[in-house]
Image (cartoon, rainbow over all chains, first blue to last red; front, side, top):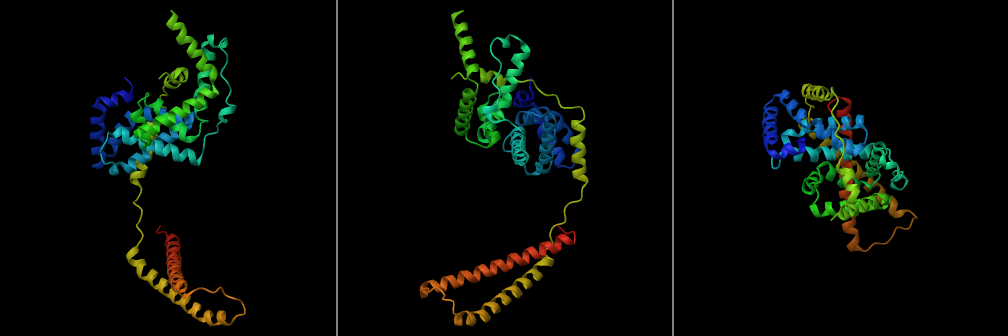
Length: 202
Length: 121
């Protein structure tokens, strides 16, 4: 079970609350439990913002430090993970504004290899990586909804809460982002439609 | 609504495993942060009388400057724009307010600079 899914179960939420209470009572060591539970999700979230492993860990570390500083200010109205993700998104957004990742403009992102090459698993993997990296070329207002929506395993509500946006706005931005990506990689859609059609015929 | 292959690609991604030293590194930063002395708050009680005095002196100086310059300006050959009496009073008041704000800002910046030099900020 993924950490995100486990957090929804309530077990992790209880552990988080207990650790937060201990930290606020002065037990620094209890913060380790929080870091242990959330290091994976936060690094993976930062990775989706940067596509740079080293930087992802730096950003995740900064997010944990901010969480440590701001723990007393958490009003415990929602789950700890929602608060942590929203805080991390703010940290990643502001850090990336200060030091942006070097990306190609969306129009210059290379088109993934053609269908013939995609029989090879490696070529498919490379072409998928190009699409994932192309997300970073989207304008920030469209990029972040895409990053968070797929990071949260396509849970629109959770992604909207992390960004602090209404779900409708999130949905509209997501739709615009998809349209931009589809325009850039038209063959992916064509392949998908062909695959769907073949499935129906079979 | 079917969003096709792009959805599949973005939704399926290999998970990164945190590097072995990550947890230790975060906890070290947290411990350093916890051990660091709390920042000394700005000594408002001590600084406020001085700031008020500086603002008063600056305000008085500005007032005296304007008073000394006004007759000279009136007798100068430069043609000043003619303003109606209804405009003059609010403009004059706004000028005083702006001057007072400027003086306060200057004294605040000055005191911050002094506090910064002495290591209080």
